[in-house]
Amino acid sequence: MAKQGKKRKEIKRKLLHKYRLVILNESTFEEKISFKLSRLNVFVTGTLFIIALIGLTTLIIAFTPLREYIPGYSSTKLKRQATELTYKTDSLVTVLNYTNRYLDNVRMVLRGDVENNEMNRDSLFEKYKLDPSSVDLTPIRQDLLLREEVELEDKYNLFERNIDNVENLLFSPVSGTVTQTFDPASKHYAVDVVAPKDTPVKSIANGTVLFSEWTSETGFVIIVEHQDGLTSVYKHNGSLTKSQGERVRAGEVIASVGNTGELTTGPHLHFELWREGKPVNPLNYIDFN
Image (tube, rainbow, N blue to C red; front, side, top):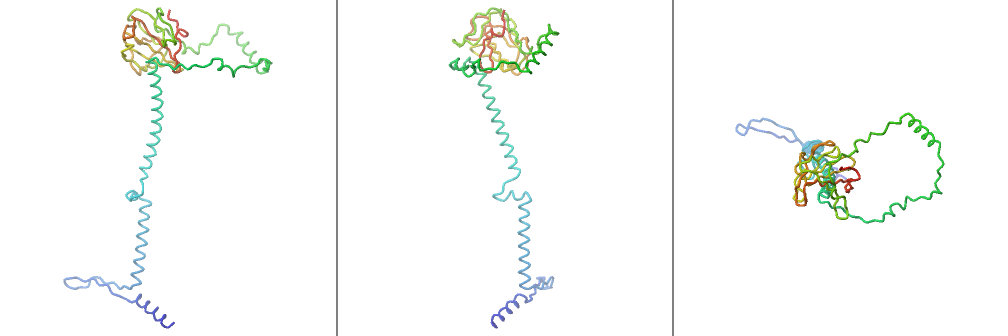
């Protein structure tokens, strides 16, 4: 016990023993600054300095942009930019897919390629067949009230008719003789209308010009997109008066009848009508006489 007590006193004496740190002028040996130190003071001061240095470094790394220069830490600005670029990339990919699909439809119109999917027509209507004996045809009260209201309106509106759908009326692009009709079996998805050369070709409805260029097979071609998924195509024109992207109105002159292209057989208009990417018979919509 005596040895341990003596040892502790010796350690305490060494820790508290005073030392003097003197800074002298090298030339004159004049004393400039002096400090009284002990080992305990040096240890405590060094420990506090190290703790303060660690705390300051932590604050700098956590709350200042300097952490971006430390390997392993990413920039907040770069993260935000990367997120924004990811969203923009996704949007551009979506737009690109729609554009490619749209251009494929335009190419299909220009080439006249259509997939002929054979199917059983009766199978389409099989699920809509109903047994008349299983249907209750007794009028309900709301039906009777509606009938009375319609009859009352018709009584005083003998000469009125619905003309709100005027936008769907189609103008004839030219007047002439139809020499070749719509024939999907031979991949002739159009009607050929013979008319004098330089006869004005008019737009069948309001729309936007999708394509207005020269092609080797069909000469001057102009394609106009209309509402409700309707697209009109005019081929073998002698000249074009509208450019791609221009808006046209129904009945406005967009071209003239010509005899251009390798597949032409004389001055005429090769007119196609497409709805939702499928060709339809123009004679069902337009009177060319």
